[in-house]
Image 1 (cartoon, rainbow, N blue to C red):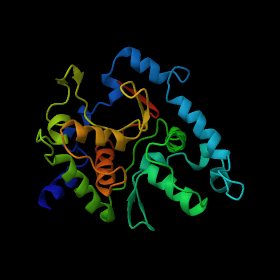
Image 2: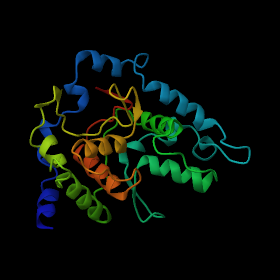
Image 3: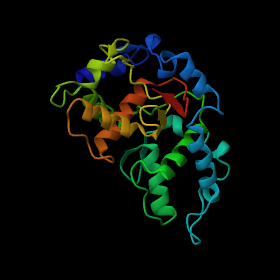
Length: 253
């Protein structure tokens, strides 16, 4: 508890183990060609999901079900700033939910439709469309008292050694960022552009997919896609990126 109190007290100066002035998004550290691809809406492949999400926003999933627009109206106004504050505390759930989970709850509870499968294109399209409405806005994660247990949990996940390689997220992304692993630059793990189009995947994917991939990479059994530990880890990573602008949909190697 003392260590967390020290971190919270130092919040204006550090993001975990990285000074705020030293933070770099993946956009800053990748090649000029990839930066140009992300910055050009006509070349950014993630925009295909954004366009699909816009169509789904206004479409009714079933004759008896309302559309997202029926409740929320014009997304450019109603969703402006929303993605910048997720994961966020949900009163009904009694804990933080990430943006995907919030979309899923609306689909099940409001539209009376079955939830999308993990990493379903339809779900990623809606997430990308909602996230796009906050493009350029600073990430603002609630770190008030009720969020502290989940931030502590996320930090513990970030610092936990796991798998046959006995590695923690922090060992790569705080202690060795900027170095190379297998020819690839080690980033700072600042999630500013999710969902993200990765050349490795040739597809758009969620932050949870990336986290589970890292866990598998250190020869650890990944959490289930909807595990609360993943949401807590997302929350902590977004807190580390607080104040940085959203750049969704991002492109990464």
